[in-house]
Length: 473
Ligand code: BGC
Image (tube, rainbow, N blue to C red):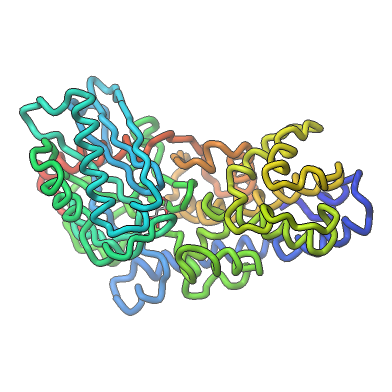
């Protein structure tokens, strides 16, 4: 990371005593090379434990390394109409994918889930999905089809994958707080909702998967060197293509292709304490007031749901210590979760001496009258620093996967609002990856809406696996 002394030197307009205080408050957030290496070693060890054939060993790991049952990647020769669903954030997506002669034509519609549905009984969530599919099929005139449309369902919550079309929910995450649903099969819940709300829907649920899996499928359709899918949005996670012989716990067949997509579920790394070595007071406070306390430790250091709150806590501390805004914490600044990651994206979008966007955000938190030029410069530096740290943390884990995949060239498909919209995440991630000298030529690509389109691709893969009787376990 950029040394804090260099950062302070850049703040030429800020008084020395303030710089000293600022440096002191930011120091615990600084990631040394040694800390990065320790994050990588931890991730590697967690992966090893989680793939063991011995259950007691697996339990020592916080991450899942779930075998997704997706074995086939698309080769461009597939044809037909497929549906993808994408549930994970507050926007639910239905996607129609038409495959013809190597070209995928995609049509997507977004449906917004209300706070009430997100916090109510889970039947409400699945009813909403069933009704949205019906609405989509009607609007797209797909309801007339004689045949049922094969459907892939991206369900982005940690689940135990039983079969390609069966996954048991382990916990809700992000903004979902339904009191029930845990321990139930998401495909069954959807089928029940369809029979309740729209019994004649012409769909056949072929596959259920995490958004990382579908993003990887979508990325691989664009670029055959894509072996890893990452989500960097509200939450975060990764999936990669693994050789069957590398997964000790794998008990399925060894037919070609001798590979399966593995869903890492890295968001919960650290829940058992293995990341305590870098956790700061800010991580602890973000966690304490989050929807799911004491869980999703890793994700809370950098994902979109938490990054804004993380920055807010740093700004509040700086204000309380007299470094910012004449020591006055406004009600807006004091309100938890009000400072979103979108605000951080805006602030980091100001280029050079232009401070327009930063000032607009300061207006939103009602500090614009208190904010001097010095304050504006400090706020920008804090956002940049926290974002560099966040990007390095996620890139360190990604680097372990890249090293593990062990190919001369690897493309990583990334979907998610944080990666897509934040102007610096990509560059900072690449910065760390190149510093690490992985002996792999790495390309990070945006797979926009990949998780919806890729869900349909997984349905295609599922049909082929069924035809060829390929069984994973
Ligand atoms: C969930 C993962 C998901 C990730 C990205 C996390 O909170 O646990 O299953 O892949 O968010 O959406």
